[in-house]
Length: 274
Image (cartoon, rainbow, N blue to C red; front, top):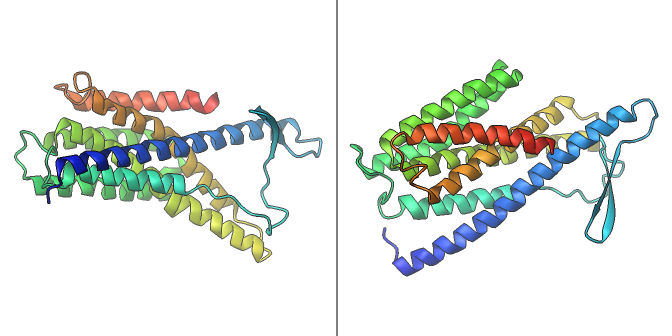
């Protein structure tokens, strides 16, 4: 199916604007709560023997704000504010862009001098998104998920392998975008399939008068932490779309991609501490 060039350009503009704006809200919220949790953890240690609740005081625009972390809300009748549609909107608009850029029209721009057909390339691209999440999730649920350092090493090796494989099948630009889309899909699936269900189970336990399972809280926190490390490489990979000379257009573009991911993880580590 081919789309009129003018309509395609308008759709590209709309989807891209929504994708970028929703991404800003999602990543911003993720890093804000990560910063908040780190500061509250420090405060909890400081007031451990005083019996006082840990609080963070902040000033922004024309007001002062105080935030307090609690394991259990004191009143379930109060409105709980969920943070989920930022992730959902970012992923949906990103998928719309992916379809518009590479899939609609029989795979135009998806391959260059590849021996595979455009339809095979489409299957490989979509399979990368689904397979990336499945493998990542199974790794997290396995004993490997209990060792952050080992998990990170193996995950990085697998990302590099995926990058190398995709650059052998897809065009350099498409390979970069698909690696970014794979990480973005993992991040969105973390929110909708692991973090939100865990939070809902905790609330159900409270309503039933039971103590929430600490493992659910730890799982949600760990997945959220991993999202903060994936966010920076995703942004790097999306921006590289505009720099073919030093990124996807390079002879060893998969090596550049591997470096971008690693630099992104290092940058995320510093940002998390800021």
